Image (cartoon, rainbow, N blue to C red; front, side, top):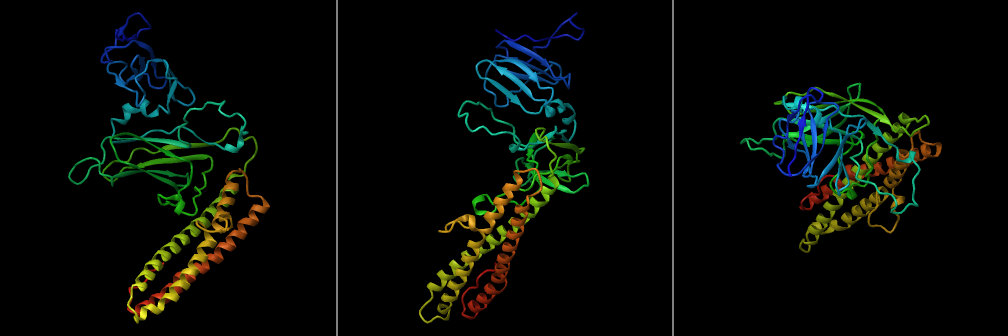
Length: 409
């Protein structure tokens, strides 16, 4: 039992054996020529799927994590350009977006290459009717990441000063810009040889939250971009010639059968997002002060009787109470009062409401946004008073008492 693959270049008058270096066991069940690159051929055998970029002169294993299973059929989707295979006993598998494989010949002839992205759809989940009554009756497979898939090729990977590959600090940037040239998003990826895929979730550049998102206090994602054409470029460092930039088209969910006002929606979301970031930064500043006050209180408790620093403990307690009160006004974690009363929670809730629409905010939503902004500004003024006046005042007293000072907010 071994595979046999033949090719004809004259419509069947003669045939050439191109079995070549395929594994010598397992039948060949299906052969397909790529519809966009006639040099690229796929073959499904008892041992998986293989591809040749030379019309069968040499074969490479294309399983990419696929188990050793018989591949009985191969189909390239004419719209999505995905590779779909049917297996014997292991269901259907899909390799998303064949552009990197179809254009690999030109890519490997370059030091760096950016593959043309396929059209991305800004899906609106609320455009479809949700079904909550089907239980386990619906089977769905794993979808590709939401947004635009971006792929690039590099001839060489990261290298450290001594020439060894794998330097974690060596990375590349995928830069997405609007037609005006303004940067929308910068994605970073580790520099490694070969093809790398990154996913753009169609959102603008936002803050970079810490690993612990619960500590961020405002975890909303940045607004999504508007439908249109964007430019994608690759920055692989000054030592690598930048490849040609590509167009990344973004279209609106085709199920939207009304006239949305996405520009007005984005203006409102940008405003709320900026408020949320300011509030989150204030929370982090207050948290830093709380940590420093706790450390200062511990130092004061260790002072000997009669040390002038001992008289500072009431002032430390007073400032800690002010900081706790301000923090509760912004965000709440361990509090008897509901988190929904904190202004950042309300801003994030309103942000979520507006983001689930496709139009400008309603009248009440606009009024809430204005009220939340006024409330936040008042709290931020009090935070600034603490960081700019109260902390320096306490630091002066600490210094006069000969105790190590409290750090700034």
